[in-house]
Amino acid sequence: MIKTQKTQVIIGMHTWAEAASVAELGRKTRVPVISFAEPAITPPLMPIHWPFLARMAYNGTAYAQCVADMVHAYSWQRVVVIYEGDANGGDYGMLALLSETLQDVGSMIEYRLALPSPSNLRNPGEFIREELFKLVENTQSRVFIVLQSSLEMVIHLFREASQMGLVDAESAWIIPESITNLLDSVNKYDISYMEGALGIKTYYSESSSEYQDFEVKFRKSFLAKYPEEDNRNPGFYALQAYDSIKIVAQAIDRMASGNGSSKNTLLREVLSSNFLGLSGEIQFEAGHLLKNPTLRIVNVDRKSYRELDFWTLEHGFNNSLPTKQGSTSVSRNTERLSGLVLWPGKVIGFPKGWNLPTKKNPMRIAVPRRTSFSKFVKVDHDELTNSYKYSGFCIEIFEKVLGLLDYDLPYDFYPINGTYPELVQLVYNKVKPYYSIYRVPYFLYILLNMLLVSSHHTPQIEMVNIQCSPTFYILPS
Image (cartoon, rainbow, N blue to C red; front, side, top):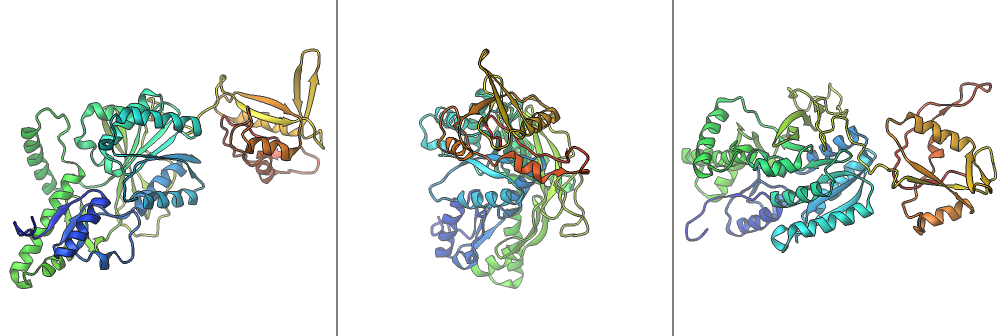
């Protein structure tokens, strides 16, 4: 097409794998390429490798930090990441970036679920269902972060997760910008599966006369072509496409004014663009958009969504649009969202984000019977009733903490005849019924947070931060 139709510029590509392939073609033919995609981590030599590539996009830094801020705001310590993999490994950059930002806020990725493209699957729903069953068996976290994925895959994912009860009162879902930016044009039936999810979208103003004129024309044209669709708003990608055409049109106008007519000149004029477009501020530096994006947190509600807080890299969350980016006079806000969030299961109180123990599956706690200090832990066995009585400082502390929780926590004590290293080995070897991950004894945390009022008073707990799960903990001996 470049040769036969004398193509002067190529516009499009919403995934980095597509953009990289077309950028290589642009390099060989010296045709400018405007892509809507950017790698999560920008290689330093990209302008040299692909000099004819202009990216109307941002790298993954802001998005990863926004996700990490949400995870931190609700004290979710472990998350599950789900993404649609590609043969080029384009998702590894975002995985690495997100893992690093989560570690910075004290959280971690517990499980990674890579899903192939639906086009490569005979039965996408069945495949996803089997993978979700594996996920449930191997993880405690119920915080699901969906990274770059196709809309088709995400719809399959939420449909199966909903049927399995994973989009319920104890779960939290965060959907990616690539999906949230499409919600304006997604069928309302498909959106309903995502009810309660949080999404991140690129903010754009709808108040300008230019936008309102565009919206009227877009809705009229869309209705004529797709009368059966119920969502007819333009959405971010339509605005981005409009701005890309405007970039080229203005560049050609400047060339016609005497700035040359070569492909190098067209590229130079494209990269010198500087105007406020419908999708945001258009100004390039090193081949990509200069300004950090302003993001908007949205909450999927029934068959649509509600807009909540704004988010910027400089200020964090804000219930109003930051007036000036880059200002350091206001500290970053990483508190919980100020807007009312309707969580999965139509719950208003935010989810714990992990699989709560139940009476059928209580938290299991191994208690050593042979201890050096009985005042810390003591196990008495009643031979007549074959029952056990547990006492001591550690037991009292545990019971005291249970009383401070705002939810019920079923548990069972298990007396164990063994040394502390043997108990640790039981966990490491996943010996039934002790099959879960070993964690640092909570007693160490309590010691760090105890405040001794005086030598004549009982030690008091100033703060205890314990995240429980249906795994067992070992009381120190």
